[in-house]
Length: 174
Figure 1 (spheres, rainbow, N blue to C red):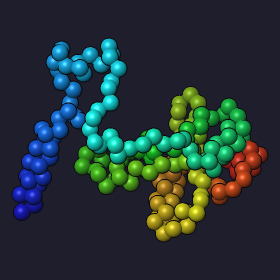
Figure 2 (cartoon, rainbow, N blue to C red):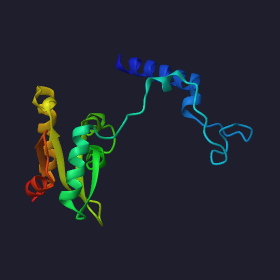
Figure 3 (tube, helix red, strand yellow):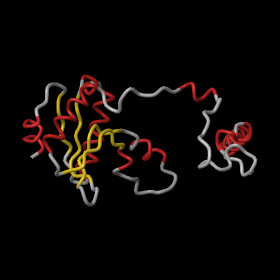
Figure 4 (cartoon, rainbow, N blue to C red):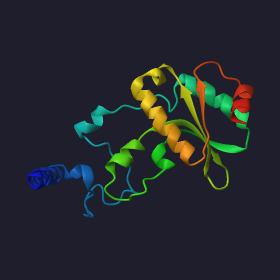
């Protein structure tokens, strides 16, 4: 039975891909407008899917932006600071194939990660805990993230939302 369901899903997916190939493939036709992408600017697609998105006003919200400015002063030039780092950029599943569950667990972001300048290895992770971190779902997420960083001996430092000074941040990171 499950093979039948799998086969039906594959057939539906293939039909979708064929019908919407313009979303997935670039034609290998010299006359095609997409053939030489470097010679022409790419025109926006007329696909209605594009209308489901809008540009974020900033990578950081106002609280994160305030913290970021103070963090830059606190760490000076000792680390490279990256905001909004996805866990999947730092960690990877042990099992390389058939691991959707593990991959989805890594689809979370850390507010800031300090990386060693030369090797670009993560040294300190930073989370800003706002009101949302008191909810049960966020608590479970925070528990998983904390355990993951602890396993690899990377400190995860938490700050409560509020006013931040470079000195306070520097002291807490030391």
